[in-house]
Amino acid sequence: MHPAALFAGGLAAGLAAGTASCAAVQGGLLIGLVSPSGHTHGPSRALPPVAAFLTGRFAAHTALGALLGLAGAIVRIGPRTRAALLVAAGTAVVVLAVRMLRRRRDTGCASARGTPAAECGHPPGHASAGGGHGHDHVPRGSAPGHAVTAPAGLPGTAGRGGARSPTLARAAALGMATIFVPCGVTVGMEVVAVSAGSALGGAAALAGLALGTAPALAALGLLVRRLASTRWAALAGVAAMAAGLFTAGSGLRLGGWLPDFPPVQFGSPAAAAGRALTGTDGVQRLTIWATAEGFRPGVAVASAGRPVEIAFRTKDNRGCTRTLAIDDRDLVLPVTGERVVRLAARPEGRLRYACGMGMYVGFIRFERVP
Image (cartoon, rainbow, N blue to C red; front, side, top):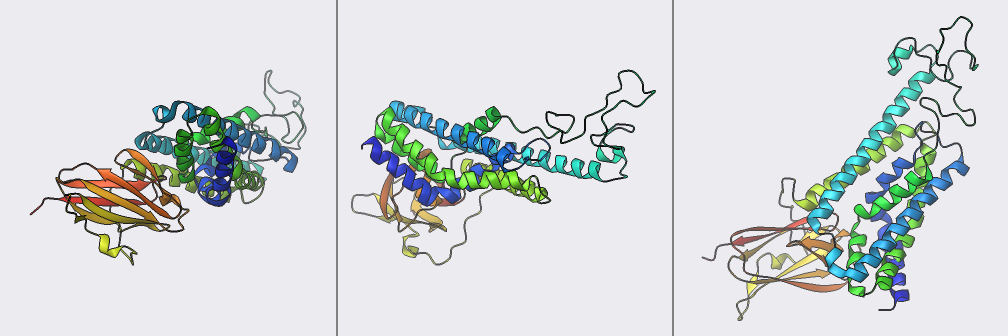
């Protein structure tokens, strides 16, 4: 496929399907754009870190696409490795959120008039920024070497707990780190990059995806920076913590490191496909629908010791279940259509599969033939 067509496909995927899912999974990293004091110094100071984040993200995705297109499946990240990266990224986001909430608490405590410094986590007698009358002078008779912090908010000051903005390098590094926190659409475009067969084609596919999802992430980044300088800063920290827990939980589910509970079966469009049917050729055939709400049926039954063909079907599905990890490999489904996976004969037990983001899981139970 021509690189221009691959770029257009990635761009369309990012705009149509990647906005919500990528913002949910990768948005937690945007909390790292908040300055150490939680202040942003106005909209003009908010734009450069967000732009650096998006630039780093675009560069990393383009480089990854080129590598995948050049080397193919050799450099692909398997489902288990991707799951571990999701857990690590989610944990990092939770740590950032906790630090933001603690800074907000300490800042609010220190700014309250008459609040003892010891109650804000400082040792008794510690002089906090902006304390007293706000003058930057050494009182007469003070001990030599006594450190007096400059008033907060003065240009060029970056004292203890100061309002120093995050460096552009850190923002760009956070953007690059998003390749380790792939959303479901990213996994699908990675498969497209592999099939491109060239560095240019692979780079075009993932570059288009990064560009298509950029508007949503830019808006989210500016919102997070804005909230950090208002009374809603605590809400931004809580939202970031929720995003981190969501990302880590998705990784744990994708890796199969959480207790599995068979999903509750509601009205399934393929209720009759709960048990595999064996054809005259001895191959079992099973149909599973990948829907926006999960896999239907969520639990299917097949006979052990016989090969099985699983037909994953979709209808107007642009959600997470369009990409799934099964038997240690990734599978990308069409928006509407069918993909067939053939599995060799398996012993008694259970086969677990999950969508590319680990949000939805399904099971195939292999039972002994009577």
